Image (tube, rainbow, N blue to C red):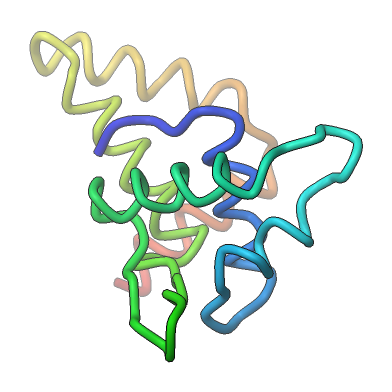
Length: 119
């Protein structure tokens, strides 16, 4: 799964925060009005996200409703795994992972170790 652009991340945040499927209009209304985004821009972003498989479209009357295919946490984990799998070899992957672990806080590391143990 490829990374998302800034506007795509903002749109996804609206879908995740809503907790229910939203129409293009609902997403458009929830985005920061100071950005001055056109309705059609939001519609295009949602269409692209659907083509990437990041959201699903559900026909509701004359409009589509959109919902995320993964939770925010699942998508973040998938992006992290994709980044690690791009390493040229095991040593490079291990070095990248060690560097990442060195940059996160002790609480996050403890939570990761607990999750691995509970798995």
